[in-house]
Image 1 (tube, rainbow, N blue to C red):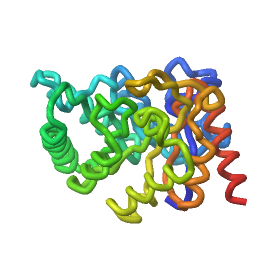
Image 2 (image 1 turned 60 degrees about the vertical axis):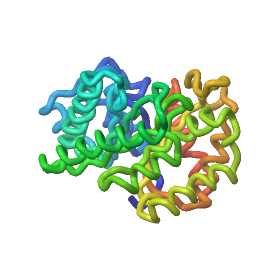
Image 3 (image 1 turned 90 degrees about the horizontal axis):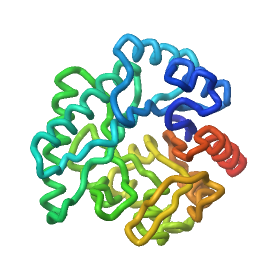
Image 4 (image 1 turned 60 degrees about the horizontal axis):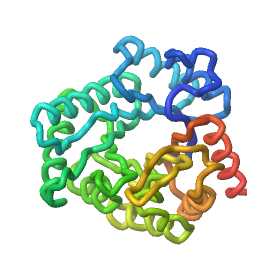
Length: 280
């Protein structure tokens, strides 16, 4: 990608067809002056194959980049085998629909530690993601899988784990949620130098190619001793989002920034304006 693009997690709130018209959402994103939209399969993969193709055609016409978020009910480290199989199926179905729509990547929360040794959890999740990638490539689906940096220490998905996974599995790159990074660290990761350090770790571990193809989530967030509590608008959070943007600018990253704030498009537009001002 040539620059850093900004978009919404799902259909913009102000879109008159927000009730479920993904196609209208893509066109509305462009009317707002934004560049991207994430297909949100929060509870289920709710886009049929032909509709996905239509959405893809509209995105191409409007020059809107699509990404995808698989359902939240995923745990690739569940103690119950059936839940692992269901999780794999949800990622595969999300990836197939995303591929038909021309989405660049599919992000998901990989799983939980459930009291197990972290290395054991890592190997289990790695094995399951490897299987998913193999299935997708055998189907001719080139979509990138993006395990997400998670907001609670009880969840698999630290920055180090994601870099390691991406290094170990071809076809995998991280989705870096900087609000989660802030919450997971209980507020410690919240200044320019810390954000630069995270980007430096990604470049050192995965090379310049990863820095030039970032998938980022941003929002306001509240946290407690156990990490993330809930998302809020950027202006109501202690998360230093402006310094995160400044780090993006200083590091000259490329890719997509998806707003997950409750007022998704307002914060997306605010971030885009702020970032553009930094480039002047």
